Image 1: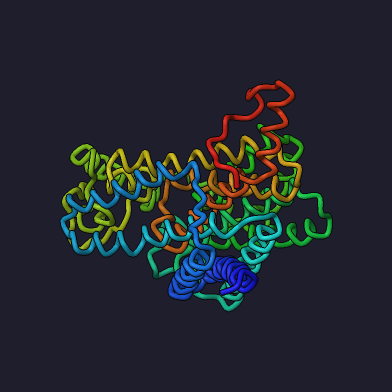
Image 2 (image 1 turned 60 degrees about the vertical axis):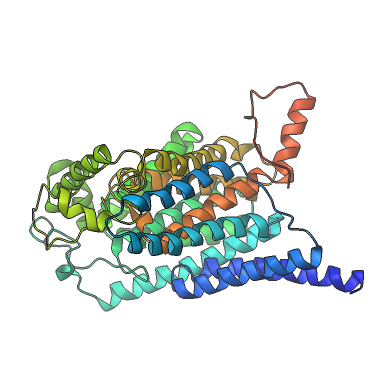
Length: 433
């Protein structure tokens, strides 16, 4: 094969890798099967690219070691699972998707134009999800009998939309991330036309969030934006407070539901506290390897101190931190949280240094998306959902790509030449892309 044809095949394979990534991200809110197929296709094109190129061209990242710790300890936790076959299948099925999507993101993206295309696809998928949620609200689905709300504490909440996510809390967790991404890009990006479109989509997403009546998710995104306002730009606090006040004034049912967090204890709150007590007992009994990957469903009846009935089916602890620590142990938990919080820290610490306002806004949005999940994880575990967890690892991948971009490396080198030292920027453990 001549060199020109070989280069063409390499370029075509690289292009198809990227479009496979785009398709995967688009399909996540709608079909896990479709997203899995396009994810596999992306790796087939990566293998073809490596074949024609004659080398793998693998990009190393600062997440490799903590991610490896999480993956290894997750696998070893299967030893303690009461249902080892289930845990093994569940582990292979889920962790493989997380790792493959994270590294496909790293290996596929090379420039800012590609990141812009990715955000257009994310926004397009989010718009479809939001519009479908509006349609559910207009049609008037009745969810009062689905056990998502305490009917005695909240008799007025008879409808909670869930769009394509099958559950209001999952939709709210997804919208948390979308709102954070939109907010970050809107605040930093200087493209006026794009900012108008983003503002409209943000308002639509916020209204859709309100219709989920998910208290934890609503507080989580509000807390993430408030943290940004307090530490970076206090001018946004007043408009943000006014926006929230208007939404709550229009929807008094949402206002009283959010207020209930401080005023009363419903069955949902009582159950969460009971679950946390049971989960802490699991952690104390199995601190190193945990109870087994995905085994919470099987182990909980043994630690059921609240309802004491084997007919109760509880699939997670409604607390991200306790659930992960219980299932894969303390060491695996530390590996996972190192990936989580180091990505969040680097993004929020360094978005303002980027010369590109779009990349800066993207980095801020990704950091705030992780922060909203961190807050939401205190009272729920939405990353239990495979598709949402895949979107989470994709977000971390975008952060790593931007942090390893030539722009960020140039800033670091410029500061070093000016003898500023590394007081303004941390010492990035990245390889140059």
